[in-house]
Image (cartoon, rainbow, N blue to C red; front, side, top):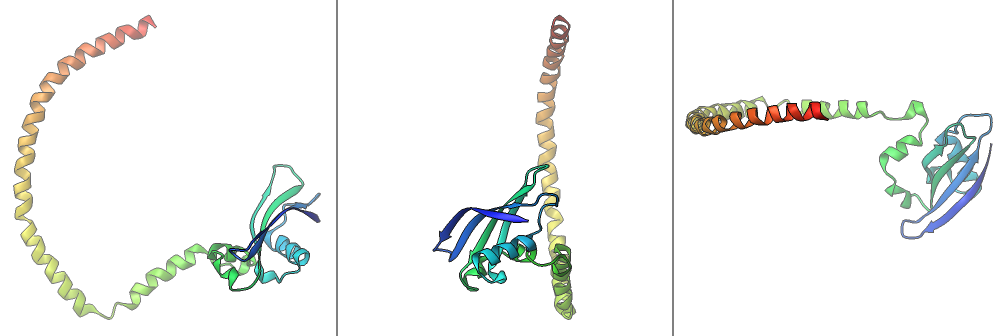
Length: 176
């Protein structure tokens, strides 16, 4: 497996070098991120923990992959790398799945359960509010009844117009 550096750019603002590599992998599949990371760290003489592979793209049936790599100058500068990219750089058995993080979130509210007294008070207050809210829907029920009367008169005008339009459409279709 060989590779060549196509582009290299220094980004002083972010404290990193950005490189575009073409990895030739004839007779083998697309290289994984760990392999590309090791190749780039050896070439640029940087520690592996400061090299991050942004993307790997291979054309269908091709034997070369285009890789975007970022090499950070120090660990502090590498702190801006998103967590999902750091997760991708780990071996598959060490990666953290999204499902596990979602399961941990509901576990946190379960820890707050020792406050049942506060919940009972909160439940009593909404019950009172529900009683107050019951008369309001009765008032709302009257205006929709008035609204129904208005559209009913509008509906009477619309069907005859719709009936006239339907035969015209039916006649126009056979002509075409």
